[in-house]
Length: 126
Image 1 (cartoon, rainbow, N blue to C red):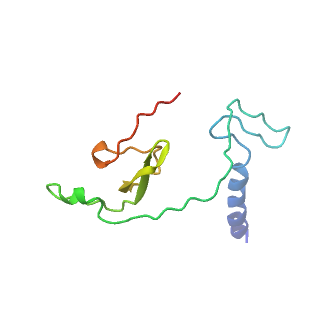
Image 2: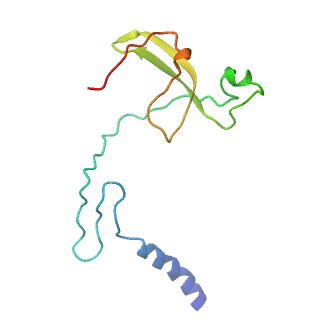
Image 3: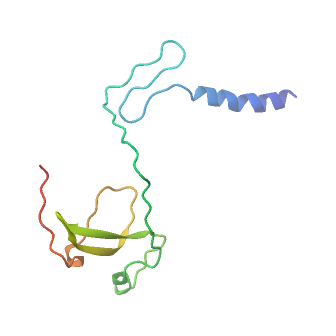
């Protein structure tokens, strides 16, 4: 019976030890028990959730150019999407680029210019 009690209480002790504690990005975090902790100095902004984004994934051997290499290559376990790229300010001049690799650890889009058949205008960040 004591062994059973220990097996039940031990995981509960670990869970209780995980409470309170610090924040992640942006600093600060609340404490437990006594008067609470202070907030951190980081100005964390939480975005307003929008509608869910759903895209069709392509999972195959990859772009045809991979098969043309010597030796031929394949993209194993790689998810791709098609991306529609338009000239800034002109929604009628667009091109769909096939087999853009989905990389959840990156931000932005980089496309090799030889893939594009439309001329994009240079844009500057002001």
